Image (cartoon, rainbow, N blue to C red):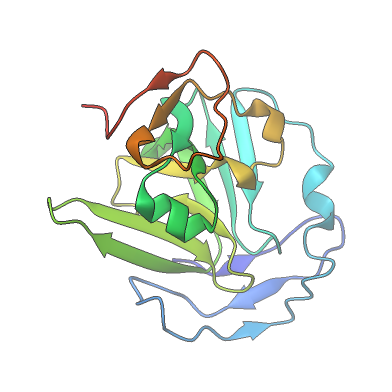
Length: 183
């Protein structure tokens, strides 16, 4: 994955070594991250509902997706709860061809007993969880809604793995509820 990100609005460049199918423990060398100022310029542009942009906390990983998402919802599976450190992950599924992702990531692949793989990508600098799937290999990507530049664009319609939902999570009304993964 190309590990060069050149933000706009006078924010310093962030350059890291490429990470290609690297285990999550691989060290990534970073030059001039300046985490305190790196995200300043990312909220100056207004998005339309046909363009979805976002990224990690420091701005080192960015994405732009075009078109309407396939799905939006909340995942309560144990994997998502543990990966997020929260009760769920709010997700947006977009076609793989509709999204462009830049930046150095640490990829974690969890193999399930049924053969599925959960692929999560976090910024190699700040550790912010940004998206799921492998760039260039996945038919679709799961964008984590907390990484959107405009969070109001997240309009969930479903909740999956509700059997694992913590009791303290209150769901908004009107969602389609699935105890597991919908077929």
